[in-house]
Image 1 (cartoon, helix red, strand yellow):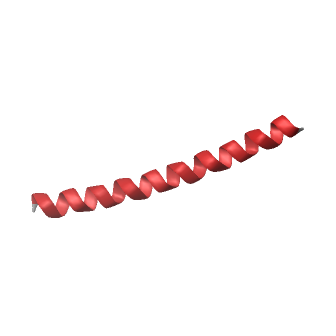
Image 2: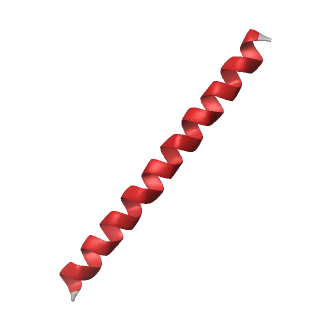
Image 3: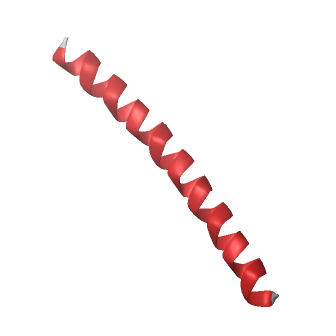
Length: 37
């Protein structure tokens, strides 16, 4: 049971990380667009 709970926690952390990464990517894309224009 403890291992399963840890796995769920890790999944949630991974999901949060991907969300942050996606947001960071959007920011960098916007920045690069404004620079190229």
